[in-house]
Image 1 (cartoon, rainbow, N blue to C red):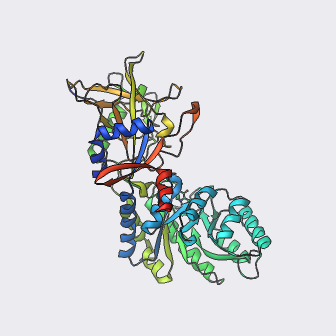
Image 2 (cartoon, protein in one colour):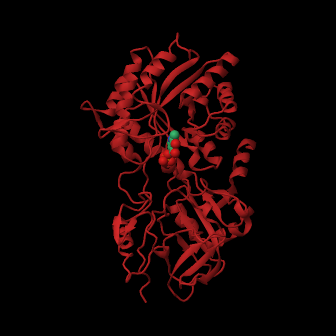
Image 3 (cartoon, rainbow, N blue to C red):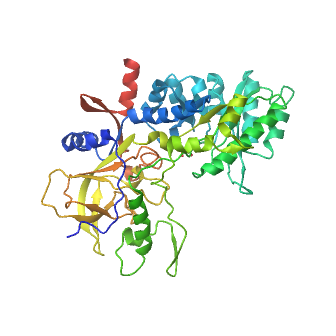
Length: 479
Ligand SMILES: Cc1ncc(COP(=O)(O)O)c(C=O)c1O
């Protein structure tokens, strides 16, 4: 029997993951102790990802700072690690900011891009003198009012949007429009302006999507805005170009292309499904004619992490590379990578609870987890999981769908059919790779009163040890 008609999507896996997943006894012990699923996080790749960015900035002689976008993973140990490894944290809520202060992070190493900044949050950042990135007029009003009440000043940046690209404006609900911001800031933020307690510090943008070309245009226009502001005496010390830096999850371009082709072909009645009920993952099928592309993250891509950043830095403005413009003006370049800083940092492991055949003949494998514990806005997580049987058995390959614990028909952990080399047994484990960026936490819920998954920090201290995130964090202060 051929093992599968389902195209493979082999994930890239770092040695620590290979090492751990080859020790089923150890992992089963952790699942028995902490419940299923468990999230395992390893901090070494977190540092390595930072160093990749740092190296490229150094190569171009740039003043730079990296701020890890904490929203991508809630583990507190990552905040401590950022401090240890020498980079900053981008925060989206008061609690995220408080964790940074508790970890002893220098306020200069914290950036606040929270979409909603209420009075309590603003009071806290004023008290700790943490610079904030302002998004709108009401936010400016509220911050300034509190600064007057407290007789304080604060360093601020302004978020920009509405950049011009290919003759059109890029839409964003965030930030001040690029065509209005120079007037707004120069009228209000100079000494005689109404926001005279703001200390102008810099400019910020974060673009939706993953286009380096759009970022080249945005950075170029931001530099022009900085030049215009300097005519009013407002010197820009940083430009922050946010996150959205691609990472690469998959090992093979051929597998990626084959998957897309097989998905499209699967609508033909004679073809087997490769996704649950021939789900096209966002491609639109109009009477057999397919429109659009799957609405999925580009899990395979060749321009990622530092290469992606390098492409932007070497983009041209008036015939001169952007990095030179920044250097000439002594402007620090900042980035806020979330997902790409967590490349290879985490895995999620769950236990097989049942096998059954559905009324249309599919083999469903129930795992002790729910789909909010591995969920993103992508239509599917297109990586083959690692199957970890408790015992090798006579090889009976099979194709399965993994389903979870919520009582919804659509509770599929992966929409894609997955090939297993042997029939799964109750208690076998399944490891989902590279889940630290958004997948573990961004959408997790406690519906049905299920406990949230335990997050364990793993370290190789001759043998692998796992410590719950909260405990790891607390131990840091006792040592
Ligand atoms: C302001 C801001 N910065 C950084 C990020 C991180 O983006 P990514 O995880 O794609 O790098 C986000 C994500 O939404 C964001 O809104």
